[in-house]
Image 1 (spheres, one colour):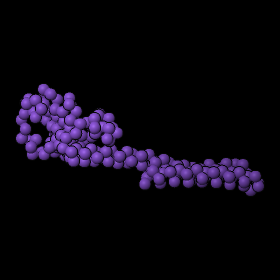
Image 2: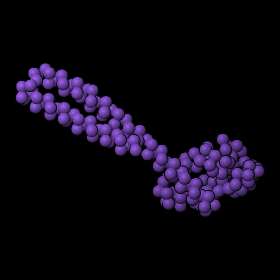
Image 3: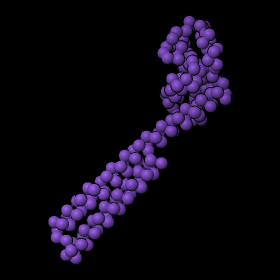
Image 4: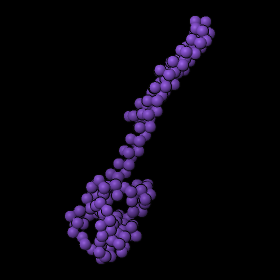
Length: 171
């Protein structure tokens, strides 16, 4: 909505600027205004009517772009969460192809979802497999499901196996 309003304001500002310019040229041509009065009228008209409208329009256009990017990111994270929960386990390459994103973007999305407390599961980065799992099952883990190594706390909501690199995400 902000982007559309921004575009409307910018277009309106340009139209108002053209109208002010045309009026000053016509009035000066008729002799109704001196050149100084026409220039003053044009400068004041642009400064008071056009520039604020263009500035606000540009801000709304920029802000609308940010909101659209945030909404797109949220949609992608929702899609990733839905795919993993529905399938239980999935190869990261398959997710990347299906969602048309890179492996790094999937990594970032997973960490965002973990940070928000929306995802629990684990991933083996070497094999590239993402697993959905109940948080209660993961909290009881002391050994890696993949290699049997001792698990270590790696950050907020993340347990990591130092031997094979498998990361477990707790809700």
